[in-house]
Length: 148
Image (cartoon, rainbow, N blue to C red; front, side, top):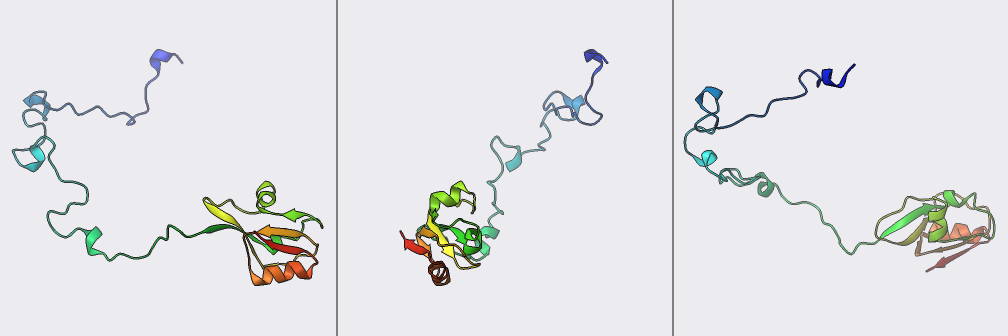
């Protein structure tokens, strides 16, 4: 194989359409734009979404939903994920991130602990929020649940 014998795969390359290069090319004179009209003009055509004056679909369909820009998102963790944590450990946001116990949430407002699962060891959990069942389960195991 020599470099001068290499060629692109069949059908992978397409010749560029050369507009306005004589009548014999098939795209001479009006360059494939027909005669006059909006589409023949420089800068002609309509903006995206324009439907010829008809009410556009984006305005015909009703609006739904609401995005609260002040909503707080928390890094959520369940007690089942804390079951294997050794006794006496202080579990906080940094501990959870370091040990990859939960998926990191962008723009979060801290850690939230939910009560799914059991905790067997006495651990200290420092979080922004606790569910009632999570707080009760941690304290039942002899640990403490501190709200930050």
